[in-house]
Image (cartoon, rainbow, N blue to C red; front, side, top):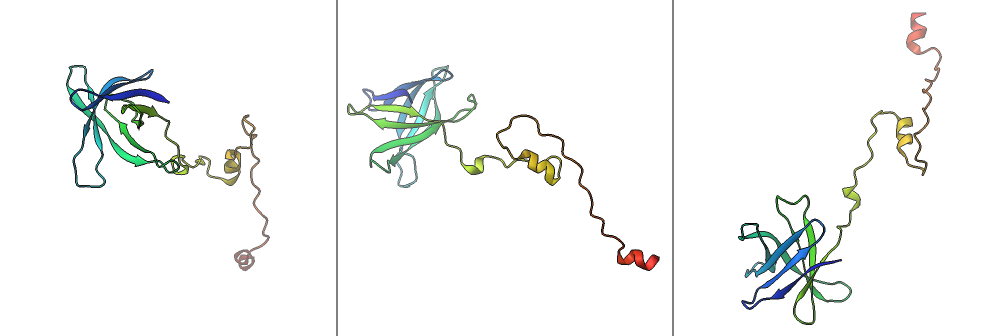
Length: 157
């Protein structure tokens, strides 16, 4: 989903804005000059309420697996925000960038395993979802096996 755009200004910097229901910010990109191959391509700055530019993120250059198209990917984060905003910027034919957002995909390791507060196997079985959303029926108490007389019982007799 496109949430903004960046265009090159008269000074050669990309500037623009992002607008969503919860976020509205004016952005600028400053190119990073580094010999480190893992350094970002751009730093992201946002204009604060007092007019000062505040660094809020970075963009790395990526290449699409299927298309081979180059694009920028990174995030915007600030203590005033509830969550980090992951973005990708795709260059248009006119040299501007479309800013796109997509919800991060959850991995299996992001999902916690169900906890068993009762600590017994039957309660664990009740946690296994089978499509029925009603409360599970109470489980019956386990019966202990009758082993008969044990060796220690026989000695005492």
